[in-house]
Image (cartoon, rainbow, N blue to C red; front, side, top):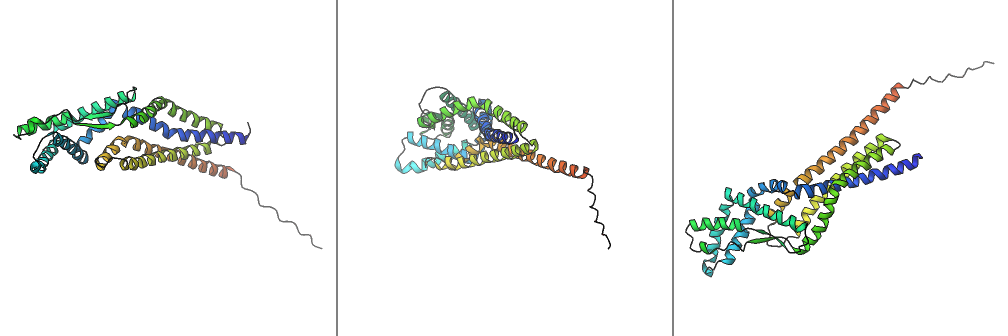
Length: 299
């Protein structure tokens, strides 16, 4: 195999490896980080203490209660304020955190079942556990209408039918790719380095390409955040949605920057070893003797 063919083949293999590496990271994060129930619950549990999330939950529960309770128009603002403050106070209690974990576990199970089945109905989160706790607190405070608060009409849609159809196809692909993409990236990178004419330069290129791909993945996460928040309905809190997005993608962003740092470290190591090797070769070469001056012949 000629040097030219080996160079082209090595560059192709390394380029493919650098493209597959960030895709492999994303597929592993999506299927293991979000698809695994225990990891998902551990990820979203701290959100129960997030101020923006608590405000959004309080607003949703309050609106649900006020839709179902018959209150005189002139008293509606006062009752709304009272209920909102009561719900907001409840979101700081251990009972709310327990209800939050219960609701998220149910939502995760519903989403996973929907993604792995052919059911195209919308996926909803049931806030009934939170509403039930609020009802108990208001009843204990002797609020007249509290005992009439229904707890079965407090569902929030997580995924609509159209979103579910798109996500189902993508999730099936990710489940298949979560193992093969990382393996293929490693195999292609090793093959590209072994085939290369100058392996040190191939290692340098692999490190830089991996760092670039990981940095682009981190950039894609940031761009998707802006798109997701911009596409939210007007009645959805963008600050709360941003907090949820940041929490869910924290591991993906961390791994992306770690992979970027690893790629740059490998590239820097290859560059430094190349300089050291060139200096050693230069110092090992014997000094060149100066050329003798031509002898002048006198007439």
